[in-house]
Length: 271
Image 1 (cartoon, helix red, strand yellow):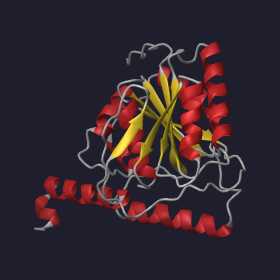
Image 2 (tube, helix red, strand yellow; image 1 turned 90 degrees about the vertical axis):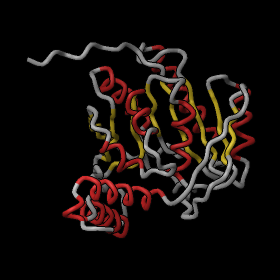
Image 3 (cartoon, rainbow, N blue to C red; image 1 turned 180 degrees about the vertical axis):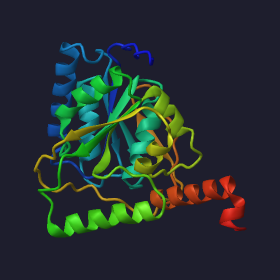
Image 4 (cartoon, one colour; image 1 turned 30 degrees about the horizontal axis):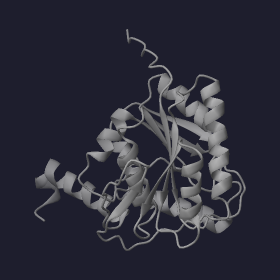
């Protein structure tokens, strides 16, 4: 007989939002996510200490000044600015590093809010039911063009061929509890392919289907030139240093190959 997991109670939630050149929509994003926090707090789903954490990935427009204004207007809005554009995975990793010791759970979501924010209630419900990791999975790809469907299918096929365990139709809309965040951040790589690494953590993982809202295409782009550089964090309590390097997928595939060589040197052969 398996004992049921005790409900840990309402968690303190950090919503981590990487963003790049989002000046046209960032005010809407902040207001919308604050409304979701208010509603979830009122329902007893999360604690009043929950907050938003934005990571400005080297935006060249007014995204950062607008985020600073939001930080000044509401103490639940915090921001971190990278010294230049490092790419989505590096920005997300920086955000998780910053909130790890400030929240019981984190939920990462894209700044354009095309991923269904309402699904966060179900993410937290799954956490309170015992899940350590909750992945938001697209219900379908009906809204995608034929080209997008083809490239997405090819990506998942290639990842499977290379031994990467990636959940199909899941991007980076996910909940990680404190245990999962700590384990993910313990990997020595500083630019993880987070979608692939979460499957290696070995914790209770649940899938939540969600819809994609039809909004203008996000301006967020990923760079393939990740070199070491300093970033700074603005929280009203000082500054912290974080570093980033190397393309995320390349780092993840190298990790898998190194792991396989260590586990089965005779089968893999000498390097």
